[in-house]
Length: 193
Image (cartoon, helix red, strand yellow):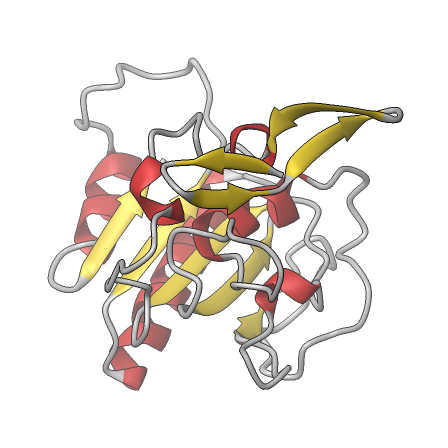
């Protein structure tokens, strides 16, 4: 354990040696979200939907459970499977992609507070929508609209995380794709890419 501002933080292990405080190697520190590990914070994501478009989700990971052990995942739309439809029945296992990127990113955004650990996601009580994706533009637009519509129907504000990108295009918001994304993220919605 590492003591930081009177807060006990678990240490990372490298072999049998304790190295870096856990909050640093969990990327919470790296993204500049230091305040989330401090006690007394009030904004914890309750009543907000976080939709993550990515690859390699573990749908029933412990970081996505509430304090009573129930899943905070409200919907999944596995676009890796051709012809799939959105579902509110959360599958067991993963999405069929081979890394752990989506689980990692979603845990940083909304990992649950787990007893014994002082490190958790930025919005540990947010509801989640997981979209395993091929990252094709038309598909991303479709699932972005789905998340926006789902949140509107639930009457909740939302954040859409897309931790992917490319070097293609002008990167100035003028493409039809960017215009469409802006349309889906107006009142009540934020897009993080």
